[in-house]
Image (cartoon, rainbow, N blue to C red; front, side, top):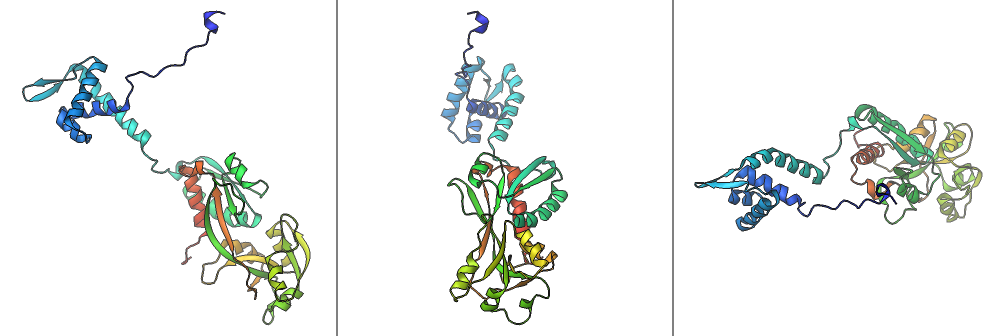
Length: 321
């Protein structure tokens, strides 16, 4: 085997490589006093004297020599002073937590997995925020096609937003807003005339939303407690399709809306745009909590922090809006 093909040994760190020495060297050359350098680094003069002795051995130069009552730098020390200060500044920058990012400088495409309704509620607000503050940001919204845990872990998506109920133990989850379900009907629907009772609601035609094609849900459980059942004529995979069908006929669909006393929810925007009337359901249905989930490796990433903050702003509208 030729010498060119022989494996090269891995480089070994120098036995003298110690970041603390660079910090001590900067303090000694700046203060030109063992006592003052020790005070600056919050150590004892004896420890600083030992460090100076070590620096002299490493650099093979006395660095500081006594001149009367003071200490003065050697020519070699004068050469090292600026470089030592620069090295310490770089070390401080390297080991200091990030102070955030400039959104205007972001150039990134974020991938968010959400239902059609959540995506429709998020996209306008996120794009408006990006135009104003982060024009280099693009948004990709995917349907709920992947299991969130592996997709987050593998980096296929940056964020999942919706009703989070299937996360891996390491996944970070933050609740954003809690909403209730209302009955959505077209303007002029018979249910808009007179009080809405459980019996009248059960007697109407219904559209269900289920990615798995289920015909039953919490409303059926609540009706059953009153000895009632409803007829679901069709089940659709998305809320927007169900709302469009409801707006064009006499069926009823469930629409997320804000809790009493809360500001309007962007989750209801599509229903209002289609002209639907939202009627309070006279049954105790469980509330729906919308949350966001992400992998912990993104927790301190400045760009991902901007994304999460933008989602909060969109889905948590202020009360005075």
